[in-house]
Amino acid sequence: MASPDTDKMSPAERRAGVSLAAIFALRMLGLFLILPVFAVHAHGMPGGDNVAMVGMAIGAYGLTQAFLQIPFGAASDRFGRKPVIVFGLLLFIIGSVVAALAHDVQTVIIGRVLQGAGAISAAVTALAADLTRDQHRTKVMAMIGSSIGLVFALSMVAAPLLYSLIGMAGLFWLTAALALGAVFTVLFVVPAAPPVPRATGRFSEVLGDAQLMRLNFGVFALHLMQTAMWVLVPAGLVAAGLPMAEHWKVYLPAVLLSFVVMVPAIIMAEKKGAMKKVFNSAIMLLLLVQAGLYFTGSAGLWPLATLLTLFFIAFNVLEATQPSWISRIAPPHAKGTALGIYNTLQSIGLFLGGALGGWLVQHVGAGAVSLLGGGLALTWLILASGMIAPPIRRPAAA
Image (cartoon, rainbow, N blue to C red; front, side, top):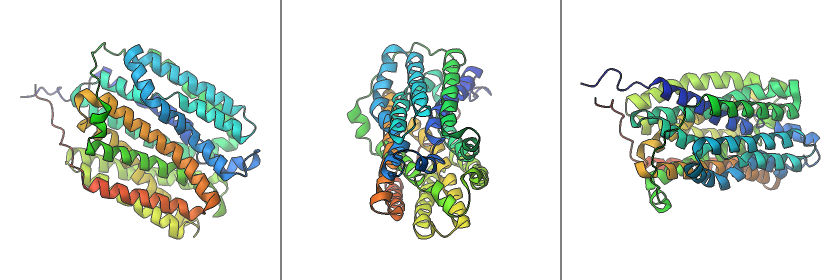
């Protein structure tokens, strides 16, 4: 018989999971906190009349992350996880300060590029893998994935309120202060990583795995849709008659309802072996949201609020399930490589969403953003339908 404690996380594993999820979330806060407000704020800045430049400022964060995610992961193998994570957080702080002091959109872009240069996602997930046993790794990866959805939802609610109190510069100063707190968390809260030998997975092995590449396309598509949508959403709410300081009145109920739906969905996916069913349902919901935005995006406040609620539900479910699925099916000797590629494609999606979304609005029209999102969601749904459901987790034997 298995010991009753066999399938319970140890205090050190819980501390590692919570602290690393918090660090990951603080990094993502640097992107998400400006999403609900920057597109409107930029109108009052030099260069703010260029929607493509505004989209670049939103998405530039993901550009340097995309290029540096894998090098930072490799550096963490050589120099240790914690030193690389601290170095990345310090770069993030410098970028936040540059953006806080900026007086034009171009300087904000420079700050955002520096923020993204601290590409610690792969190092954080690798450290999470180092600090947890196999039977609990999926839980910790899901915890990290859920933290992204949580901080995104929190940002949607808090950013308009904070912006009305401290302004855009204050938001960037706040992210710098939070990142400084994250540095202390890494140094004094996160358990020390064990000196374990690490095998290196070949890129060709991961790139040739159809299951992993479908998940990689998914995280790319999800984050591209996300940042592209928020080139339009704040202005859409203002046009519907809701001042930016009151956008929380839409975001807060949408966020709360999305978590009410997400939690039982994740429990069912994990406990009942319904991961694929829940996963595909969330992608289908994304497709419906994009279609709804195309046909009713300018129909008023209630249709837009309803569509945003559905988007939050789908986003949070997918953010929680994808890292869990990746960690479960990646070859043990190639987990680091698989996570590096996964995080790189997430970053590319974040960058392209802002940049391409802004370009499409300026040169084609707002409807093109929804058509792009719908095409990505439909492609993702087709790819995901052919995936093999991951095995159900079993309690480890004694």
